[in-house]
Amino acid sequence: MGVGYNARMLSISAEFWKHIPPSEPFRVLLGEMRDKLYNTRERTRQLLANGRSDIPVDDTFTDASQVIVNLKSSGTVALLLQIMVSRWL
Image (cartoon, rainbow, N blue to C red; front, side, top):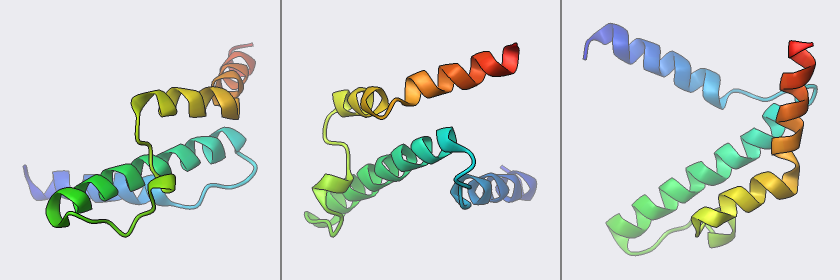
């Protein structure tokens, strides 16, 4: 993979982590999930590398079903569908 690929990935990564404006509620909800998924990955990496982690388990997903429950309980799925439908009409 060349230098161009790495530069592009850094650009995408910066866009991924930038501040989410409150005027975009669907991105706010998904941003919360993004953070929890990131914490899950980092906690797992720390546990595998060191046998311990400084990331609280409450800030992570511990079961795949928690992702679905989180989507349903936050109304994310319904909100995303509303946004998609409103853009199509």
